Length: 114
Image (cartoon, rainbow, N blue to C red; front, side, top):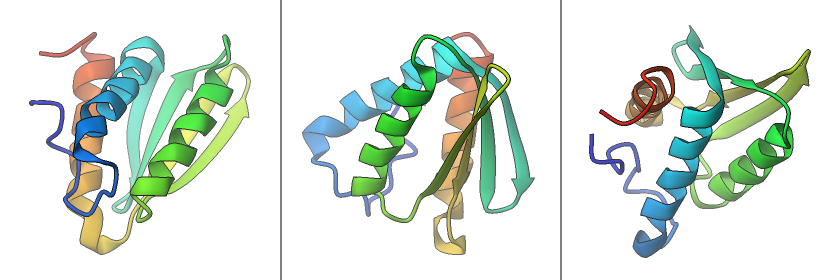
């Protein structure tokens, strides 16, 4: 996985900035990811360890991500030391969601890039 596999061609973030954004997601996954689930075909749920400004970090990241990839629908909730990030897409972008789910699992649950 080269890191940009899940960046869709419809993303409007300048190409030069895409690796930096992927690195932000990777750092979040590596540092905070506890669990990845797929409660619905068009939605992935990430459970992240809270604390240390995690909720604010997630909210900032998803706000910026939504600005360049408007097909994502993000919902952030915090409860009992866990920040839950739900990421939903329409059927056209299922492959992007699949790749993001794989990336989170590879980077976060496996303890780093393979």
